[in-house]
Image (cartoon, rainbow, N blue to C red; front, side):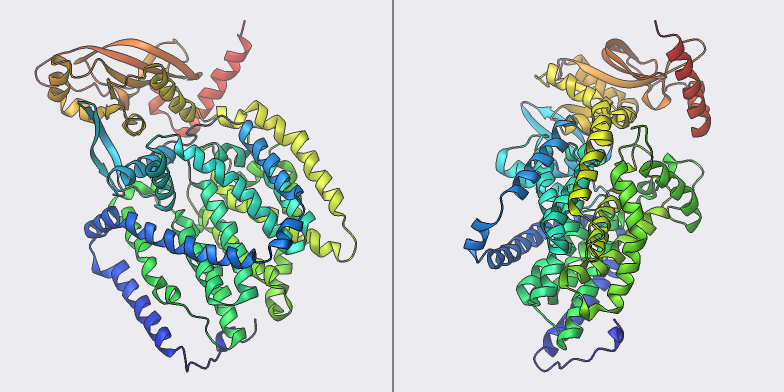
Length: 627
């Protein structure tokens, strides 16, 4: 890599396109950061985001087809290839899918993504519907807002809605397909690095990760993020080998769509740029295409969408973790490292980790870092696949460092564990690469590594998946499934729900409105109650259980006050100190609104640490007194 920034090209045939690319880059900076106000930027994303993603997806599919067509030009070689890798991917994919029930695992991420896909399907607008009502048989989205989450995954789900009709379960269908796609890509990347045995090891190590199974059956964008990371890496390997416009287009568009999948995945544009720059330098000429020339404009949507964080500072969710005043800081690293180690090396099954992957991965990681440093110093001697991985390692390092600096970057937190998936993927690649390097000296046997991976699956991963301790801990996800259970048993959906998580009901085509709306505009609820617009009006509430007296107190955020008379219909206790309740509104007092009293249960006044202590003490007593 010496002299990387001292490259000289002959620009005779390329100067016009390079100048145009520079102008596009300048225009993208101006449009993305300086021209539009925050409100204008958000409106541009709302009404233009769908069409930008559609254009990028069509261009990517077209470029990918051209690459695949060239890859599969030798059909005889394809038919003579062994069939066991496909069988391995199929079996391992089924293992990941059958041990977890399909459902929305992380609230509010997954239902917000579903809501955006719903609006993209019905309105071609990037909005999360916050209120919706059945109006004479037609479900209408009344209002919404731009969500902070990127748009690629909602766009793909909305495309499934377009092709098969709207149903919330389409997101599970997408993640099912992506699960097999991820394992197939892992095999291909491993095969390019060190042969078929390396590909098989990569597949087995991924299969050993219960966290992957949890997300494969969920409604989030984590599977798509992993697929795009591996696909971009694979296309980077192909581009380093072919060095032509077709491979450049597919590689570049894959990197851009990866940046539009998760917020922090934009960091992987760093290795994308380095790989392209390396090819230019070694070829002594830029490999250019019209897609590359206009590529800076494709990222304007990312810059505009990020203005959500400046308009709504609550998007950082600092309030969810009291005591933090900045989203990122180096001071958070020591604490986050401790939580990361607790996640990766927990042996109880309470964390959705893979012990075999953690042990092998962290043993391999230092050697992988040393190898990457050496590979970058001797880049000309490296095979395309290995050079691509060495450069991609910079993206994994930047990604991990960012998360360690994140105020809520605690990998052992039920909500945050999924953020460790890219690092887990990096560990898989590190194991494969280091094993391949050791194999050169005949110090390693791939069969032994395959047996170790299988041993880890059967001794730790499968029992952990069977117990589901890591899923049961996050009761909010189980609560969401309870709501879906209510919808299943009341398929008429001609009722109204008052719920702070109104989006859950709206995305399932049930009329819903938030608690605050029902309080501040009580007259509207009274009108519909009096005129029997809905067959019933229900309210969802959480109650805290007083550990000393056993009495239940409605949480202040769910309190409808004395004006609403409620009758309990369903009730379930998801944690020892929390009761979830669905009640029917039997009467509403007319007249001026009487707001709920500000008194709350003693639990709401505790700090998170104090609350955790109270829960632990109560749980111990609870276990001791079981009959």
